[in-house]
Image 1 (cartoon, rainbow, N blue to C red):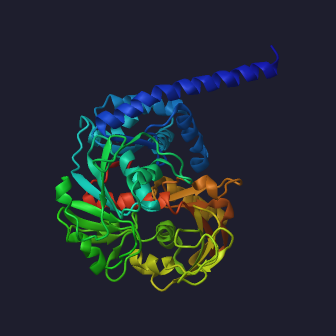
Image 2 (image 1 turned 90 degrees about the horizontal axis):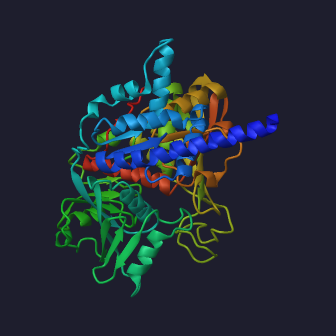
Image 3 (image 1 turned 180 degrees about the vertical axis):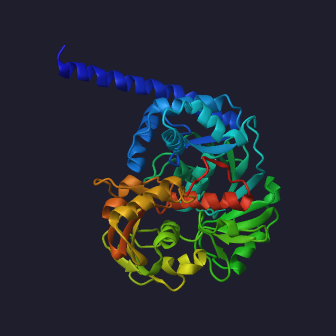
Amino acid sequence: MTAVKQEFDQRRQSWIEREALAEAMIPLIGGLYRDNNVVTSIHGRSLINQSVMGLVKAHRFARQLDDVELELDETLPMLRAMSEMKLGAASVDLARLSLGYKAEKSKESGSSLTIDEYVRAQLAEITDGYGRDDRSSTDVVLYGFGRIGRLVARILIEHAGGGHGLRLRAVVVRKGSDNDLIKRASLLRRDSVHGPFDGTIVVDEEANTILANGTLIQVIYSSDPASIDYTAYGITDAIVVDNTGRWRDADGLSQHLACPGVSRVLLTAPGKGDLKNIVHGINHDSITADDAIVTAASCTTNAITPVLKAMNDRFGIIDGHVETVHSFTNDQNLIDNFHKGDRRGRSAALNMVITETGAAKAVAKALPELAGKLTGNAIRVPTPDVSMAILHLSLTNGTTKDELNAYLRDMSLYSSLHKQIDFIDSPEVVSSDFLGSRRAGIVDGLATIATGKKAILYVWYDNEFGYSCQVVRVLEEMAGVHPRAFPVAVL
């Protein structure tokens, strides 16, 4: 047997073994989710309902963050240990568990600590929970069913689990045609940007309901936010998520609170006046039970604020400018036509369009220490999704590109902002590679520029799905149903 043939056979056998490991993981991941309300992930990327190839790719992707490919023969023992522990509800990141185990082993040369022992120690707080989920169940109503509304619906359906936590109960829209329900369901089922819905959808035109993966969604037709009696549909103490953007102040959004069955409102846009603009990971702990109306700020504000906080905490920000290269949105014209906004009447599919952004000023609502320090502008470009923010920063403390990237990589892995900040340093990535990212923003390390006290950072973000994930995190905070996450952040 030649050396080349031997290597070929070895490589093929190694691949077959990896497939077998992934196949063994699938029932363990599913069982933990269904029976224990445990969501498993790799660096924030959910493993629920993943195929064999999806699991292999998720493990492979880990190397882009911590330089080491996550081996399936490391995570399979973790899953087996977790399956035997009768865990309570939680979110568990296997990649971060693996990193923690390796760090613990490196502290003591020759340590006999096994993966099983480490996992049991890390998850001791929820051992013998027997799938118990102490979270209350909170009804959610989506008012508006556009780009963000449908993606939030997908995430809520995906997170439905055993029925605890957030429960998507209804969608409110204005009726657009006789076959409106069929069209709404079709838009949930098929998406030109984000692909097909992962599951099954059944429409009941007589009852005006959509059944999506076991979640029964009542479709309510109304053009008046204050006229709906949600209790007539069995909905009580609901949080209404206003995706229309039509009302952005307390007076307008309070119309929802006038409806029986509604207790609170979340706006998926920047709010006006004294409304709290929440960027999850930054100021979500400022939400109180007395906040009847909360806003989730904008996609750009969510993308840049965590990175700006990390930079300010370590290096100090004197001032800066934010330039956003943003995908076009529905409020622009496809072809040239009248538009009340400047330049937005020109074809979104054919032009780069300079426009304003309030994201730089909005950062100060979540990070008051940056008030008055940032300016901003935006350029709309002919892509349907995924945008980029370029941060030009003057720093109090000088740094280098390597130091800066190492710090932001660590923040993405170990800090309390690991769900908001991602990091990548591949020389081949482009905007479409970040479709479906669940992080608020992804730092492109190869593009980083640092010259003493000047730094320029390039931050990608899925302005639709990444933002929708942030919206759901705020929803979980409002409802008090955010799952406990393990391992605990160390930075």
